[in-house]
Length: 432
Image 1: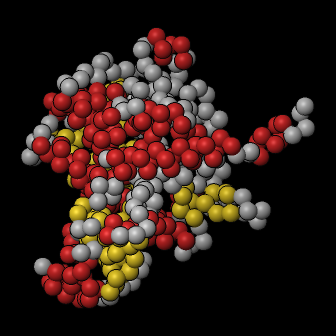
Image 2: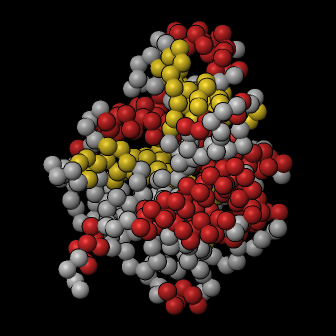
Image 3: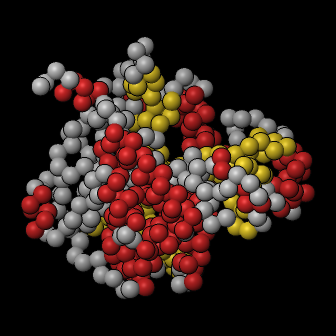
């Protein structure tokens, strides 16, 4: 098979493989390998210094110091914006065995557990993103200076000005076999969204990583910065990465399992927040109370409801939309922990309780409390506390990755807490 694949790649003009994997933060990492060494990539993997990768916890010496990204032949795809190069997604291996802290291996484990219940999962991921640039003073701004409407959702003045980038992005995604359903201007200045058709959960995460590679490269070529920062501007809505989820038994939707699965997602919402909203900036998006942006679609409360975009889980026929994840989430880890939470709901036959059709953004905190609906964690430190107390989600991550994740994220929260911001200086420097 590798010989046939290599011949096909050479016929397409491919001379190098980009062996790509994701680190703990969901950033794409990798190296170029000549296509002549495809066999080694498929059999052993491309080698990396393990301690140089965020989240591995690997030592500097010995056989476990080496991290190998072993290529998955099903993921090979030429990169239209990088002539002669094809991406291949790698699974992490250490000392000849699947590496427990590789995010893709974490998701493989979760999906294997799901399969043991006779189920598979399909997801459709909807990433939102900003196109940014720095102004003459070094401050971040939307790349399009004319993108200034008070309510820019679905703006057909700004959208055509980015037609070149959006068309190139669409063509790159379509060339990889991704079915792009739509592209639109979102609720913030300089913000856009792309929707893909649903696919196998692992493939959807691979697609999301390909999307990020393409968008970064195509934006940079046009003098812009592609950003998946959750909330770059305090007075503008943030970027979510909503996930549409369906369960299947062979070719039939397993609708009978969805309520229990949703109940598990709600029961573990606090711990899931640490993984699906993994930065200090994430919690500028998930705010209880009035938003500075004046408009938001980010959930703040742990609830579900029929076609209710103000709830954490929006229920739809034969599927649900998980609205917690933001654009900074590692898709493999977010999906793996979602599966673990949902399976806990299935195994314990949890009941999600009645859904709500209330506009939760319009209710007072007291009214929401009367409904028995609790809030999500309101900062990264609180989310880490919830994660550390949740054995189900910790087990899904595995001991190595869970330990590294909590260490890095608690350090991030501490650095943020100790940082003195420009806002603080303006408010306090001459106040007392």
